[in-house]
Length: 199
Ligand SMILES: [Zn+2]
Image 1 (cartoon, rainbow, N blue to C red):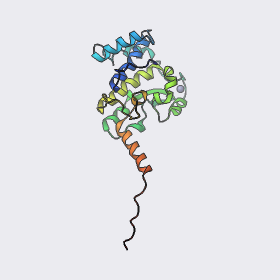
Image 2 (cartoon, rainbow, N blue to C red; image 1 turned 180 degrees about the vertical axis):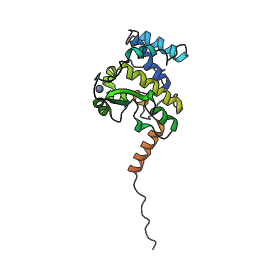
Image 3 (cartoon, helix red, strand yellow; image 1 turned 135 degrees about the vertical axis):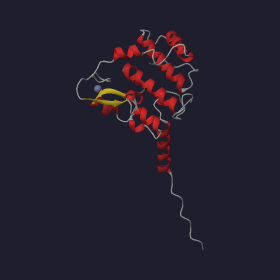
Image 4 (cartoon, rainbow, N blue to C red; image 1 turned 135 degrees about the horizontal axis):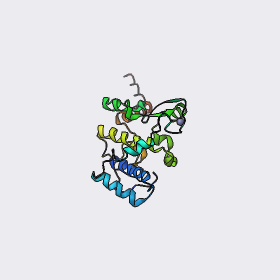
């Protein structure tokens, strides 16, 4: 998942397709093969390739029943929300989506608490992108596409407004982001000055 996207990959929708094209390449045994990734990307973008069904069989193959999707542990299992529920914001459609099975994977309690309040990209970080289990990544990409589709942000260039389009833009729920930013603004604000009594 480490190929840097070309310049024309400049929106959330395109960025998700780019990540997905790399996943498809990996599933087909052409990991990090630039030509293969670009050709799959173009098929995804043109609609020639159905992106959500294209990897369903691969996902099935990866499903191993009751094991931690992150570390493979078979005991102490719990349900991990790929995008944390605490990030659902106030849009009832997003709240429902994040509470649905589409947002759930099986994870051991240790991984679950280590991940905490982060999505998988934030948890693994840019240095360890290649270590993200394919099943978790595939589910995350599908889910984040639906979140952005619902909130109308698929064609934004930088949803988290940090100056770059990257993996940290994918798990952004706008209503949560706004409330987080206004919390910060409130905290940083000086109280209004007390008016001086008139002489
Ligand atoms: Zn685990």
